[in-house]
Image (cartoon, rainbow, N blue to C red; front, side, top):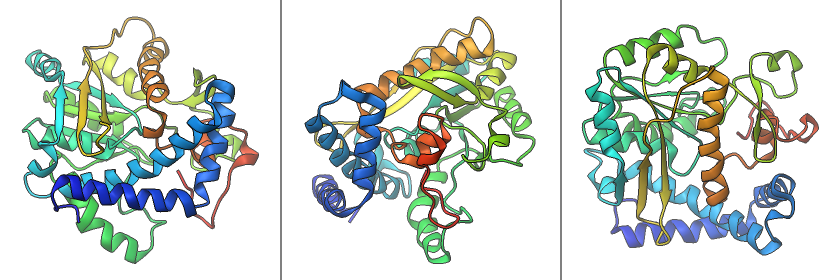
Length: 308
C-alpha cells in the first residue's frame, strides 16, 4: 500500500488510524493523559481531535518508513526542507553538528531523509526495531519493512544509548570530530524501570509541560565540549496527511552550563508539542511516568513489555 499514489496510500492510513482510534483502549489512556498534563488548556473536543490525529499520524508514519526504501525519493519528494543552509554552515566549520529533535512526528524518518540527500548523519537513540521484547514474528516483519529502509540512509549504525551501553560519548565525539551530523531525541530518560527509585539518580529535574520532568542533558554536554553547533530539527505533517515540512533551526546558543543550554533546547521541544500535541509519541501512561510527568503508580505494564 505504501507505494500506491501518495493520496491513496496516506488516505488509507488515515482510515486505518480512525478505526484504531475507535476500538483501541489506548485512546482513552491518551485522552486521560492529555487532560492531566494540559488540565483546562484543551477542551474535551480538542482532546478527542488530538487523540484521533495521534492514531492517524502513527499509521502515516509507518507509510513514511516504507517509502524510504531504495533511494528514498518516494518519501523525499513529499517533504519540504527548510533550513538546510544551517547544516551547510555547520559542516563548513569542520566540527559537525548535533541535530536535536523529539519523539515527534515521523522522527525515525526525518534524519534518514537528510541521509538520503547525501548528508553524513547517524542517530544517537535508544530505539531499535530488534528490541528484545518484540516477538520473533514482529521482528521478522519490522526488519525488511521498517528497519532497513530507515537505517539504509544513515552514515553509521545507530549509536544506542541504552542502560549498560558504554562508550556512547566516545562514538559521538569521533563522529563530530570527523565533521558528521548526529541526530538525537531529547525527550527521554534512560532508567530501565520507572518504578525503581535507584534508576532516577542520573536524570535532572527540569520544567516541561507544566511539570517537573526527568531528563538527561548528556548530548548537550558533549556538544559544548566538542564546540559543535546544536540545531533543533522537527518534521511535521501538513493538513493533507501526505506532505511534510522538515524544519532545521539556526544554532541554539550554548552559553552557560549544560543544564542551562539544555533548557533552551527543551523549550523548543515544548513549543513544538504544544502547537501539535498529536505529533508527540509519548502520551501513554508509561512514557509519561518514565519522564516523571505522572506519578509511578500510573504505570501500566504488560508482562515485560513497556508501552513507551
